[in-house]
Image: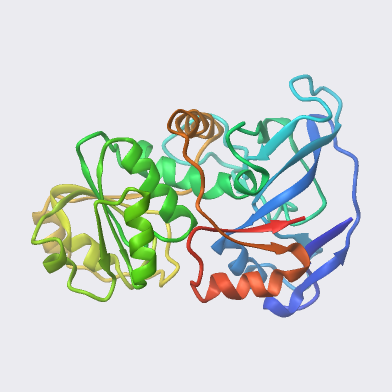
Length: 329
């Protein structure tokens, strides 16, 4: 089968689009013929984390397609079923943190950037009818991450105010839509005037320039909840927008892993700092019900053929997108 995989060289030099072995599903698995797959920041990091000497691994965590073959013992799915891939392996029930053995598809297990993928049957979830194939193929990882960060960890409720720096990527636009649908007031940032206008159209109450004075732009208003995914570049600014006793949930660090902050200011402010990553299968099902109820769809950026991966990677690396980048497989 055709696939985008990493092998033989470190970093991006090891990325290859070509043939790789296709296998039958094992007991408890299904094989899915992938129609579309979504690009995530995680895919940019995998080539640097996967050792050149290790066996080839197919990249990709998001995807959607049609069940092509069913392994022994699978009775809830059949060939022809249209499904979304749940990229969270070995995390079915909601819990305080992922259980031992939790992994994300696309290293170490083969991912979705291929014509076929074998996954445990519980990781193939029926595709919502209101989503087309492109929307379905980019949904799971970003939407699961956004849902857990906002609701499970952040405790978002109607009437709260939430601040989302950089809310123009895949997870950011879903955070915005989820929070607005839940009845919260939503404030976001972006460097791009065009993206700020788009955020307002999606339901943001305020969209401010990332390069501006955030406190001034918010007229000194403090928020109940901050969802921080940028990292070191924005963490302290984000914390400064939080009301005393408020909560900051962090799930990403695309602009730096290490943060210095004033501990005394933090404990005097009685702030809550929570980490979050991905979500369980239980939360995925809750999220699917939520998006169906509110008719939420991921914001789509550009479509590429899987063989055009280099252009897609460059677009994401340069932060040129608004929403999700999708591969037609």
